Image (cartoon, rainbow, N blue to C red):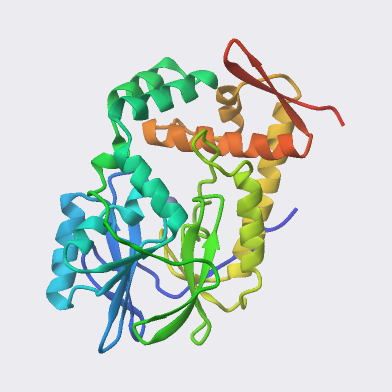
Length: 342
Ligand SMILES: [Zn+2]
């Protein structure tokens, strides 16, 4: 068994800046923290700046608290010429259109952007029905189904209409932003093509949600995700990050900046390996995904956490299926899973 200090991280800052305040991480790299109306109650954004240029990384969701924060930040600083949106989730992309309306050029991944525009244009009824059908297929209790069937398009509610003409960047691109050179890296599993920026000269990584210090990034399989094996993709991606120096300062979208990238990769690999084993053991008898929650999630889930929990469970089950360790059976439109005896 591994002891906990094997995974110990070192934190460069003991606490985050207050909402709407700037905290300097390095000369020309400032940290802004915005509130979120979820169990995960904040998101970190990064403002890269030089005498002649500034680029913001991520925006927060579209709600008055975020706009108040940006108001107070941009009383102290000029509005950024560029905005890099790391991925489609609303806490990262929610105000892209608001910034674009102030003449900020938006940079992002074409694959992520396709999801942003899809989720913004989908009809409310289709959005609800998607969740209702998905939940029913996996035996989710009626209370959660009722909640999603009434919730409307929850994505659109917290995102402003997106920017019109983003400029697309892709893995391997070199970007000059506010006086530093960055290599674009992309992450899979949490989102289909999440942008990360690595600055070799100063050894720091803007990691978005790919690697976080105190929670494990959600890795979900949902019917609208084109990746057939998100957990496999996630594990491949974090293994690729091991090529970065172990002293790399990681700037995550949630939690505190830290050093200990390689320890965190070790932790995440071990975490998912244990989860896979637990699920495989629990599937010695046939179960649906809802029955598996008691194995994976010990706490009561709120409505938002339920969709993460179902997606996360299915990502693990799919990984096992592709390794021929689990088989799925569909009866009357309901999915059941069972481990294949070794
Ligand atoms: Zn995310």
